[in-house]
Length: 129
Image (cartoon, rainbow, N blue to C red):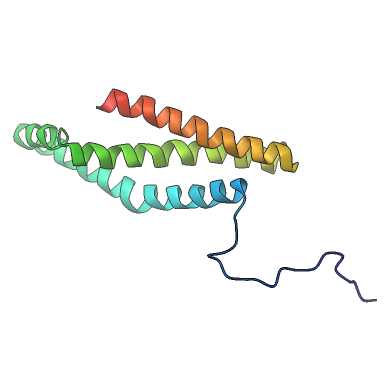
């Protein structure tokens, strides 16, 4: 028995012209933020911790280095990656429990992930700066 598709499949596979829905963007950002945290955040923070524990001199040099605006900007980027990954991860856990799987609620939860993660990043960035 042959099963026929009820909907025509897209023929255009040019990724630059395909418009990704908001849940897809949140999903890609979740993966990117996880990779950023794993490849950059963890090694950087462990290196900073190691430096801070070496001696009083390296601790003082580290404190001075952390006052630089570029370093603070990198830290704010890592803070965003953490908050976005955390919020999107909670969303995906709910989706795994079949909560919010309808298209309207999926779009709404994606919007909330972006809003809450950016709000938490701003609050954390203000505390850092």
